[in-house]
Amino acid sequence: MDEETALKKFLQKLSDDQFESFINKLLDREDPGVSEEQVKGRGRLEVVEVMVNVFSEEKLLNVAAEALHEARLVKYTVELAEGAVPGVNAEPDDPVDRIKSIIRFGLSPDSNPTFVVNTDSGGSSPEEKPTSSVNPECRHLDPWSNEHSSAFVEKYRMNLIHNVPDPDPLLDLLLHKKILSQSSYSEIKALPTDDRKMSKLLMGPYLKTKTSCDIFYDFLKKQHPYLVVDLLQN
Image 1 (cartoon, rainbow, N blue to C red):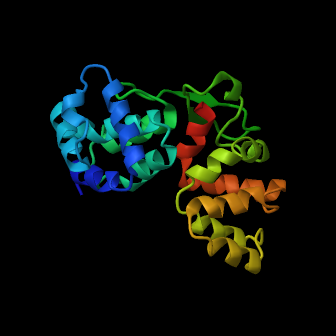
Image 2 (image 1 turned 135 degrees about the vertical axis):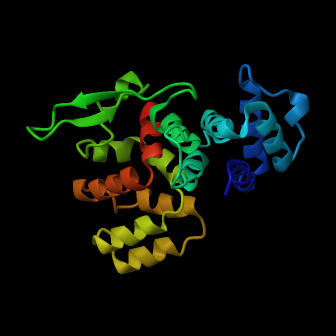
């Protein structure tokens, strides 16, 4: 699926209010940018065609990801990045990889991620970690470490309720790890929306121990790393 088709399909997921927020963030962009006449009152397919003409198809998903990010539609930014998988013959500067860099490292489309070597691994081999525009007060929180898993869950509980897409695999994992009983698992999974499932999970007694928070945090880092870093950045 090419970038234009992927974005047209993706934008159908947004509510009218969310789409309006997306449009407003497109209008906030500096040169190159779009005019109100080009996008206001237009449908999703028309807006994507305008974006292709203004930004080019190569930069299309980058611009879309930035607009979603600026509109605080974190859940959808994550879905866009994770749903856009590079082809086997992707170029080194593949636009999808650049989208993931924007979301994960807080970069502009023309930036390149830089790395620092972490030598605080207790004698293990150094590991490359990206530097980012993480909020200074959160800079000490290494998103690749479980040291702060309980604090992360506590601080970002409300954000996580509304921004973790498709929590069913998470519930399956928590059942397998015996964090959830079969009855609790069935009760939560039967709820009709992702937000209600995450609310029941995060506001209940299930993620109160360090072990349970570690399992939850490991899942987020593996399945939704962009969401983890986005929360720490903001």
